[in-house]
Length: 183
Image 1 (cartoon, rainbow, N blue to C red):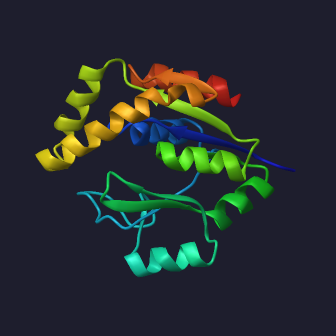
Image 2 (cartoon, rainbow, N blue to C red; image 1 turned 60 degrees about the vertical axis):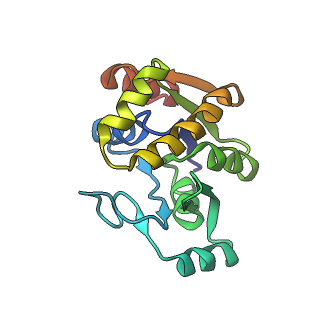
């Protein structure tokens, strides 16, 4: 029995985490990978649940031992990656696997897992994306500007994905993803 891998990606503040959490709540049989990151936790984030928070040295060790399916430095500040072994185990067990990762990582996963499905989560508009990022209040003004610059390039890359889903309203967005996943 072999499972399937769907990568959900999109620009910063598009709501990837919110959408994936809602999808998981409605379909608990879906297995969601927990990424590793070198950035510090945001308020209310839990190590091992939201991310595995690691040191630069631990991240380097994962790279050196081929322990990551993909990894990238994001926004010129921190590194993020997807641990390979848990994904491989979930696929081997026949699970529907979701990877919620950035654009660079999504394209790397396609190289390693050519049968995966890439879904681009898009904002309803540029203004909505800016409003979401600023409204989070989790980054400095400088980091917000850096993330918005990165988002411009990410939005232009949507055509490299198998499907584009506009995240206008969370329930409708999750419904569209459920349809794509065949759940």
